[in-house]
Structure formats: C-alpha cells, structure tokens
Length: 169
Image (cartoon, rainbow, N blue to C red):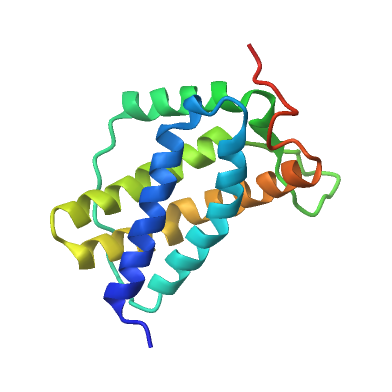
C-alpha cells in the first residue's frame, strides 16, 4: 500500500514536469509540447485524485502576482494560436447560450495552483502542499483540468496537436 509520502512524491514529480513543460512551451514551436501535455494530464489527474484519500478542510492561501499570471496566459495564448479556444459541451436547451473556453486559461490556472504546492514543498511543508493541491483541485483547477483534457483529446483525434496547426500571428 502506498503511503502519503509516496503519493505526494508522485504528485510532486508530475506537478514539476507540468510546470517545466509550460515554462518551455515557446521553445517547442513545432507543437511537440502539446503531445507531451496530452500524455501528462491524465497522470496529473490520477496523482491528485490519489491525494484525495488524505482529507483536508482548509485551502492554504497563495499569493499570485496577477501580472505574472497574465504574462503566462499571453505566452500560452500565443504558443497555442488557433488551438486555444474551444466550445464548452453541455446539454443544450433553447435558452442556453453556448460558452467558450481557453486552453491557455486552463493551463495558466493549473500551473499557478501546482506552483503553489511546489513552493510549499520547497519550504518543507509536505502536508500543506498535499492539502493545497487537493483543495485547490476540488475548488478550482479540477474543472480546468477536465476541460483541458477534453480539448486536447479533440485536437488529438483531429490530428491538430503537432505540426499541422500554426499559431495565429
């Protein structure tokens, strides 16, 4: 049976891999980073779900610089180009308005919540890191993760993750 430290270690490795991939997205203009992201997100989903066995009632606070957040969003938006926007799926009725999503927004929100947990780990607060990831997943970035996975899947089946699609200039 896995212990909290093994599950937390796995989560930390995947969170770090995600953050490194996002930090370096512009260096992989050919779209290979999206293929890596497509493979990484289900692992992230699994790892954070495993942390849910270790309950938490509080969300440790984080201080995110809004300018830094906007800069990352802008970089991701540029790197994704026409692959950024997607329609949200829901059961339609005559009075519902179609809504759209942004992969850049999803990835930005996931990134900063994962970074916060990595910072807590760096400060030697493993339990707080696990709680931050678990709570922020449940309250915030979990929906972004599901939306990003769904959108990347749609791009994959249309063969639009890699070189076939160029960013909007």
